[in-house]
Length: 252
Ligand SMILES: Nc1ncnc2c1ncn2[C@@H]1O[C@H](COP(=O)(O)OP(=O)(O)OP(=O)(O)O)[C@@H](O)[C@H]1O
Ligand SMILES: [Mg+2]
Image: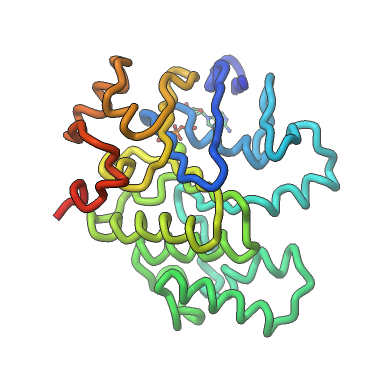
């Protein structure tokens, strides 16, 4: 898949598989095009060349009507929580349900309460985003992404700007959400400790191409120089698959 903005070629032939039901992490330096790439998955951007296949359908061939239904397969947790500051937590989370379903107010309130509770946010319904911490706002963003029961959840840098404990909480939330809601997760991240905690599959985007792709273990032992530098500067050391040995790699 290729995508340029004017003369600036951001994606120069990206070839990437996302594994169903797994936590797929996409790594890459700042400005590498990670946010641009994932926006193509649900057609927030349209590629100049190539396609994105979801369940055998090339999303770029969908008509306007099919597109609305298709987008409901996705939940997106945006890089900057992207909540409406003037709406309460409850109204923020209810928004997709009011937009896309004809559920009653009480059904909507129940779904929102369920998602908030699952994310440790019970009782925050009437608060405004400005009254919450950054980590709580991220979780509200996730609760909102989950109300329509998406099959695929995209997280754009869910832990950037959070302290290590909040990061750990968000990582655990990503893993438990993957299990509880049986979703396919795509996580953009820079933070190597997180990557090796949550990833079942890692891909590296560089200069508009996927330069490495595989299990976290393959990644640690990659011969690609850029991958090697990225991993070694983060101080993550080699060994067995970190996710399976989670207890060993978790920072204390
Ligand atoms: N709508 C747009 N119009 C023009 N250029 C854009 C647009 N969106 C992104 N770009 C450019 O594409 C490049 C990649 O941007 P992108 O946001 O995907 O980076 P990123 O890998 O997500 O970086 P970061 O880790 O800092 O979030 C940047 O140079 C950016 O300026
Ligand atoms: Mg980005």
